[in-house]
Picture 1: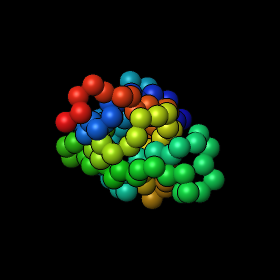
Picture 2: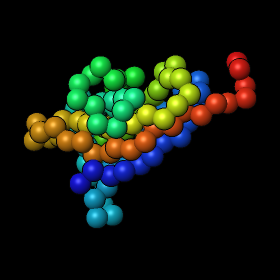
Picture 3: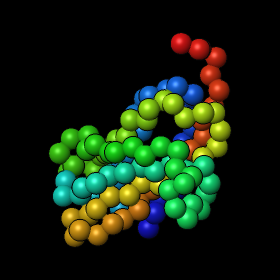
Amino acid sequence: MTATINIEKKRGDTRRHSFKLSSDASVVDISGWTAFSMAIHSIKKPEDDTTLVEEIDGTLATDGTDGRVFFVPSGSIAVGKYFYDIQAIDSNSEKITFIEGEYSVLQDRNKR
């Protein structure tokens, strides 16, 4: 099952997006998973990559046994509402989309 998590961030921020995968309140061991990818699109149901705004490779936070992975955004996405999903290749070599949701970039006050 794909979890829905909506993300709000300020324009220009590059703080990492961290996720902890669990199932039935137990941590999912993702140490054997590869190719973590977060794709952010300008529309909710893209048919191809023409609406791709940013793609971010994921990194395991530790050795993966704790289910934690993170993604560091570039900070270059314009203010607006977008849509994202996160996929990986699991330990059975199967592609899985495990998180999706809205990705909102809000205007900030600081211009540095």
